[in-house]
Amino acid sequence: MKPLRVFATGFVLHFKNLSASPFMVVTAAIWPLVYATLAFLMFRATHQAPSLLYAALGAAVMGIWSTTATSAGGAIQQQRNWKVLELLVAAPSPLILVLAPITVAIAGIGVYSIVTTLLWGRLLFGVPFHVLHPALFLVSIPAAVLSIGLLGLVLASVLVLYREASAFSQALEYPVWMITGMLIPLSLLPGWIHPISWALAPTWGMRAVRRAALGGAVGTPLLVCVLLSVVYAVLAIVLIRHFERLARERATLSLS
Image (cartoon, rainbow, N blue to C red):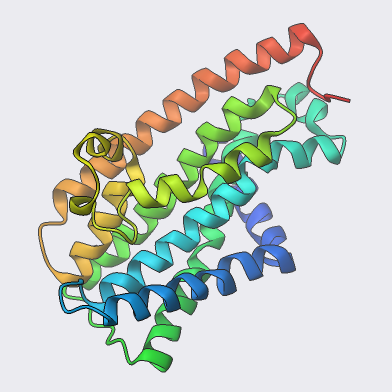
């Protein structure tokens, strides 16, 4: 139970810390409203587009990914700036249990974007919020958030060695939300992109959220999302151990 206790304590601590950051609150709660407004206006312009609730849910999950992409890669850089990365690596707890709560808490902050986006769509554009499967919807949201957080953890683990970690993760913001179908249906994208989309857990998390709200089979996308999240966690463990060893050998933890 010790690893779970370390993870839970770290998650609560970082979630509270991030909630007190004006930058994170604006990124999570305000910026997604821009995406949502553009999506509503575009979807209203054509009768062939999906429903406005489809756009609202996509913009909300986009807010979660945007928050994670903006901050997950920079999480390690922030520990460097605070001069505590070396202490965290030397701590008795494995580094994975230190980094995982940070990236999952960053994704968790994106829950604010779900609330603000749905309220924005309801109050300003009259988007009805009617969920066909409330119980599955309440399960799908945490699964999607966790999948995005673990994808951010994989990015963070790869970037242990590199000074420009934050800039690289931000560069992935737009490509990932496009190929995971958060706003653009995958059927509109070239066929060669689909295998890449299927390998990304947020694709299945987004599909589970939409089907729980709008109708459709939720079990398969939800199960695939969870399984890929487990794969991400295992991959992150392997990568962190490898890059931590390289950073020790090259004495590049501080990069100063």
